[in-house]
Length: 475
Image: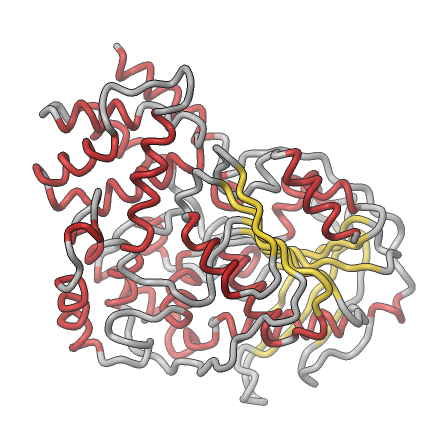
């Protein structure tokens, strides 16, 4: 009976949705005034092949209070014969405002405009002073890359471990085009959009993986960014595919939750997690995903995860298996909501792995990954284990992703960029250690850590965070 009631609670929470990496906040659309004259919207973009439709009232029933347009860009910017991509664009707030903010969603794989009714309440404080711009980044939303097998296996999860067959099938479906979905390509699209909108400078606000693309854009176009807001931060440097640098945050957060007044736990949840993995080492990647999911949907209490871990440490894994199964079920998502095709294409191009870049020969990757993990000491892995570091979904997916030309990125510097970082103390989707690393790498930046906060703080309804962001953007 206790397990059944817990399942019902989790079902209700997860069904609410994992918007922007876990937020379920709902909002009414922000009314938009009439569009500016067509001539003001039809400015040429940086790429001569890019085209801009201008803005007009959106026709999608849920978006009629906003303005919409379409930016057309080349898939391969170095090939004049390349096919083109249509990127839907939405403008909210005050379309006539002198200030503009680009709002970047996460993933990689989430859409932009279709999320507007849910996320824009977070920006009511700047709605009169800014026009707020969202777009479907290449390979997402209305034109999402769709890899059916990989999508079915991973859904809306970043950490679900895919099969080699599904990864290879996705790569075959996308073919050589898969090399044109790196963040470098998206950064160029953002710059085309800025020019199309005739914006001299703008603020950029990124959430979750949107913080990575926001930092990359700001590094490439520092003189065009007035303010940089990073909510639930992914650093542009210091990412490790084994994720071991994040494991201490899992122990800290689990213990923190159990120390919450009125919460209580039957044992030490970090020690219980470690005990479960001593008993069943191969369960590591699933427990990494499960605990991460709890930080999205219930950072205050983590539902019954500590209790399930304690039972399993004592030999009864009934509730733990139930929790893992529910997370599996309610992590399902279509490509239009969270494209696993773009997740693979972008992450495997953007990030560095033990085998090097995306150009590394496939035959050497497993050996190099095994070697790198074998050098980690147990204390670096606790409360997880080597199986978690070696077998997490990101490591496995990109190990199987066929080699592809990797865009060379040099000189990433955010010196001189006015930046605000906001981060939840209990966020494990983007652990706090990442925010601290990014803060160190952005001279003069301000980091605001919200006690007991989870993921996507602006959208999840943290009033003090919204006020802090509003004051920053209006300053």
